[in-house]
Length: 111
Image (cartoon, rainbow, N blue to C red; front, side):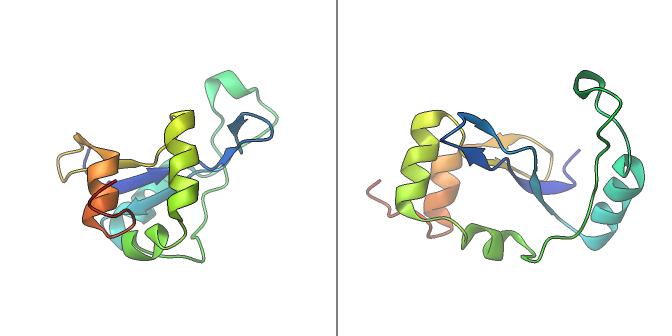
């Protein structure tokens, strides 16, 4: 729906799976609040009825600050595992993750 521009599912290389948390960069505070109101304490269908979602603000806010958490070595490992973060345009269309990481200076243009 275009309400967020970045989604990252932290990945455990040791366990070869995501860590059970997600980081989303919303385009506005109102979008974040709407998401929180909709999903807070909800259950995911294929995860049972014992663990609910906890939607909270992260310490790191915004796309630029979120991208500072990545290193080139980490990006290379995530790319090999097929777990690069997801970038979306204002209409909710998926963008090329490597191109976006280059655009935001996380990866060099020669990557």
